[in-house]
Length: 456
Ligand code: ZN
Image 1: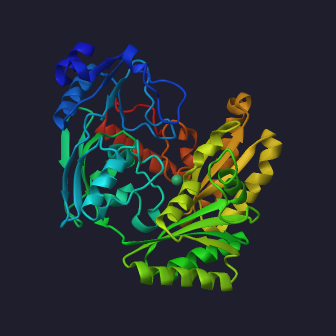
Image 2: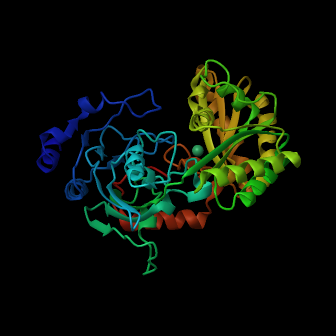
Image 3: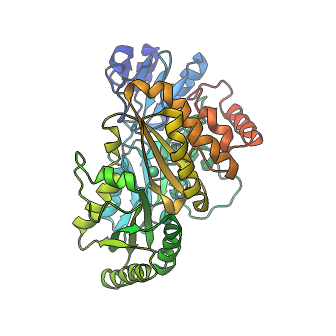
């Protein structure tokens, strides 16, 4: 195997099992990688040749990007080949008039963000793992992040893809057009397929004009009903410039504003809910006037009871760093992390039921809730003692996932299914939906060699 792979990509671009085991399994992971080999192609053609060989030999292939996923979606086994896109890091073109970027799949998200900025443009996908996550991985998992309310998920930012199929066929669908209704939109099959249908090697992405104004407020909300009203009020008042509406329950706010966290509370820690509200606009002065007026009206209507408003870029950064300081959940125990979706009207009842059910089911624990409320997406984190982790985890999952079925919520708003949520896919997808997914998998990868065992 090593010899055959080296003949395709060169000696230095194939690691054997021993070398693979020296690498970390991921940014959040304590364990190391395992695989029979790790191969690092430099071009789509090389990816194709690797797949042709693996297909002929019935060798399974797991594609890896920045290893920032949270659902074990790119775990490999000892007899499988890891195909890493780390040597496909070229930004091939940025077209400022068409407002597109053409990139290889291994480009790191932050690198593209910075390259777009040079042209007065943005690639609006943004998430905490921006410094490691790759564009190919973002597309393969349809990453969400902090600005979905304004710009959509990765799916909404991809115009075209080049994909290598399981048998090595190159499907080049590098569409540059915003509008192209000529038949099936094949790229959407691969976006969010978690490496099970093909290997994305290149992408054409939609860029946006860079916002010239940036206003952020950190506000306290008296009760949950006010939070839903505040979202509608801000969205209506800001005329399309609302770019984030990030809610935090009190316990999460206290966690990220108390030592050992570096952040300090911009407003009192005694309110039940907090929201980070962001507006990205075009004109500094008038946007600030409008942003502050919208907050004032919200105060008058008692939708907000306290607020800190950014006066500088440093303030904006400080407010965001509180929201992004999710790492604090690693202190003092092991966290079970969820990314559920549900209607905003059901959130209060759902989270209160969960809070009430946990003590009897799992005993001592910590519960933190925050998330992209404007998108109907909550991150629920339950932390238990390390020695209880494996015993408690299934109980926690059942308590979090099962109630979602009643109102057709989702077990994964943005992280994907991977291995972790496989048992719960049927909470959010019907039998018919899963049957069609299996047919598509069988049509594109009849031997089942691409990321086997993931999703279903
Ligand atoms: Zn998130």
